[in-house]
Length: 280
Image 1 (cartoon, helix red, strand yellow):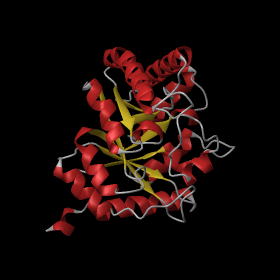
Image 2 (cartoon, one colour):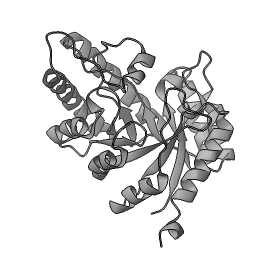
Image 3 (cartoon, helix red, strand yellow):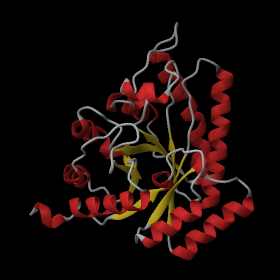
Image 4 (cartoon, one colour):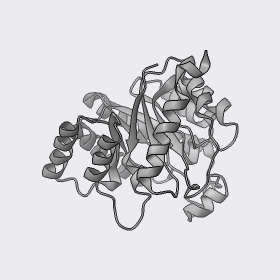
């Protein structure tokens, strides 16, 4: 398994008030000898063509791939108007990813929003009750319908929708696979996050790894911003090797230690854990 290693720009900006510039993250990725970057869409300064072109030029200058654009959407709403707005927003994200040359975007199913505080949601392990009068089956129907509407647009660009195991309907492997298998398109695959299953981690990851088009490697040096997991990356390597995974490993450093130090430690951890010599 050849290791292609990059970092999300999120690793250097955890939604603090002042955004960390994408160009700065790219410079750090080059200094750390990474292969590419995953760009968090909301971290971009603008969507102006001149700015996006400057990001592409910077990637070329540094010899970095832009291998993913991480986007946000929420299809879990009883309002058809709201869902259509989210579909149109995601189409604009696909436009942006195509402009930047990214072959995949991260998409979310969305969640009910009945727990307003993200900190409270994390305390509740990402689980929240449905809106009164509706069920999870309703929500699955909304998400599947919305993604089906997006697929022709994504296919036209040749961009994969990478559905992440995240909060909401994809909080467990069964929910994630229910959506993936109901649609059954090569343009809808899994974005496998090693830190978003907080229970039965390795068993859950094994259930979804066959459909993984990209892997997020969560790390928490200095303690997690919201929570910490003790992830065994040697076990992660075994899981990926079982299916001959060939894609990028994208670091999502979510610790409190200074990012350049935390990301460097993450790189060392993954490179050591993914060393075939350790497995005989």
